[in-house]
Image (cartoon, rainbow, N blue to C red; front, side, top):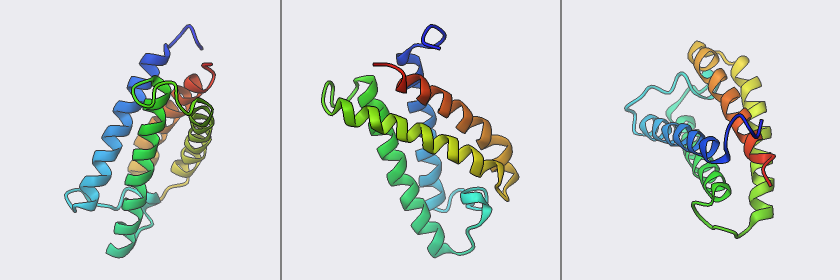
Amino acid sequence: MKKVISVRLASTVIIAISTAALLMHALILLKILPYDFVWGGRLTNEADVIMFEIISIIMQAFFLLIVAAKAGYVLKGKFSRTVQVGIWVLFGMMVLNTIGNLASNSGFETMVMTPVTIVLALLLFRLAIEK
């Protein structure tokens, strides 16, 4: 897999997808996008939407920080062991997220987000195996 995709390309694609997801969650929080296709289509009221979308934004920002650190864009050479563990944790989360997307009540989440989380999991695996 190391010869198929570079760390730089994997990082760039992950950062692009994550930035788009961060923007999507911000647009949902601002009520520009509907919330019925996130969180498995199970959110039922505005209070839940606000709480879960804030959690999503914080997690997405953390996700971006870890990947940017692994790519050497931020915190270059610092916290390398923590960043490496973080990449493996993110990989595990994407695998679980893929399973959750398959069980979603939202057709959009199942049909669109499942392939996205599979791609993210593979790209995170690529970063995780890099020393």
